[in-house]
Image (cartoon, rainbow, N blue to C red; front, side):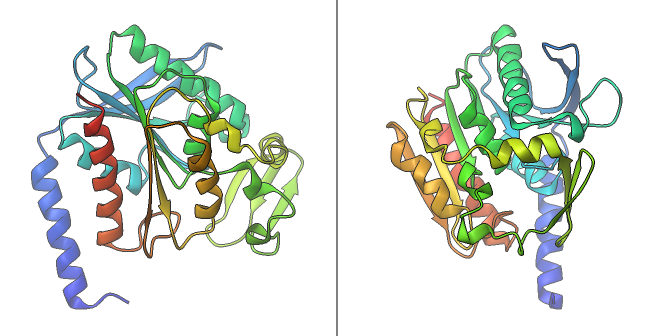
Length: 274
């Protein structure tokens, strides 16, 4: 339960952010995909040759406007790096439905976004992936200049023998082609996507020889950190890994956790923006 001091502190932080960010413009974009669909993205900053840009990938399910993505884009923007927040599914027939998507769809669409930016002449294209967004980036063959992965998903997380992800903790119900997670806030996905995830297994080698620097920022109090370490161990140099104390998978445990996440992210991106 928040104390009065907590409420005042959070209001102050929010107000300070709004004052700092109110002059930065956001633009809604529709990026064409190879199969005729479009992908909705929110640009903060500019798409131009000499301005670095970070493609931000949410988890499963998620959107460009979830709090972590929104605040992260603001923080990164304060360091003169543009951000492009993707919504892998959205409302409207031109966009994908969440039931249309598998991991392979996400990978293909992410690669199309990278090609779109390269086609616009952007010299520095970075990627930032949270959770399922992280495994998407690792599964792609996109040519990037650097990446930051926030507690990325691993194929073994869906493996039946993983003691940290037993079915009783993550109950699901299946209705024809729809799988519904019934614990907590719940979630929805297609059976095709669920079956694809369950079949991935140990995909540690996806992090090998990516050809660009990768930083892994892990939630030490969450269940995915020890699996994500497997990625770090096989990744090529230059690479980095940090575990944030008291952080769970969403990194919203405290102001300190969230700010640490963003600061570590910007530090890595600025290193490769020379």
